[in-house]
Image (cartoon, rainbow, N blue to C red; front, side, top):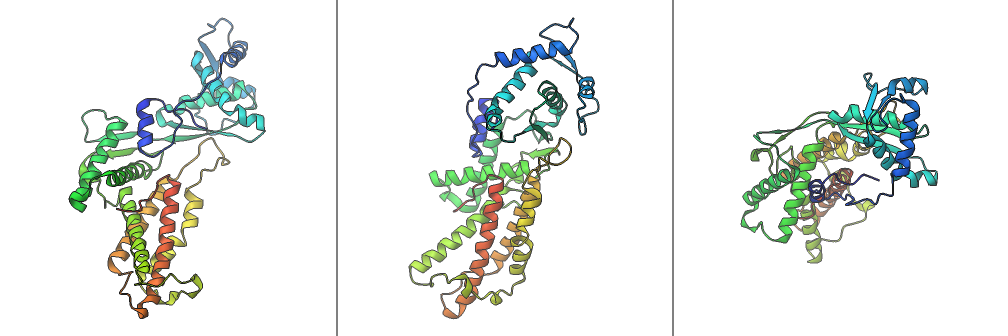
Length: 369
């Protein structure tokens, strides 16, 4: 369960990236919950304060209730607020009330910018004070995004359109005037979405993201771009389409069962590099980087998306070198089939790893280009 997008522009931007996000959320009346929170705070603070502007001594109340403040900013003290914090907490409680009613465990993950971290910790602590049985809360802090080579601010819609125009131009340079029509529009959108996601998620989330708007920074074969990974996904898909087409024409036999394959014919160094460095290492990469632990000590969690991005780019680079050097689909001669099938089986594994890793970033791989 996630809050609605903050504005229409962000909602459209997320949709362009292929991210499903709720357009609206029905909110029941919150007056009763807000009123109960106000009553609680009035009992806790100086009665001389205005009922609508309340200063809550968080650290004092935390010590009084023996709350563990490990991981919180040591400067947390007084929360100065009006109706806003009570309403925010009321919305949070309303969202998770269904889970509470089922008796299921629940964790609230605050995803905030580094500028908002201090304020969000105050909201977290205020909730813990007002509702002692509140759910487990964790914080994922995102660093700032700095746009380079721009004299004026740029919105997310402009950012997407700029990257899309650059991806279109790079594709035209590579594939010529054939880059037109609905199918190519879908391809360009997929490349743009992947490029943007890699650009943002290849940097550790607490670090600053530097967005370079220059065209030279984004190409369909740039090793810093998700487009390069997508390009290699498409190469694999095209290769298997070519094989299946040749089978239907009778040039190649059907793919044999796995137990009949002869892996001893795989003698290229690049083949064993793909096997040992990527196919066999992928489960470990997932276990270490693609999951967030909400049971770790402290209040912060880490999402190591950059490790998956680096893994995908590195795999794509080594696959590309191998693919450019080795002719996988050889001549339709019986004495060459043994090696061809072993290589195709290896490529199936590479394709599976690419697709699985992309799914962890919510990116659909390209099947043609």
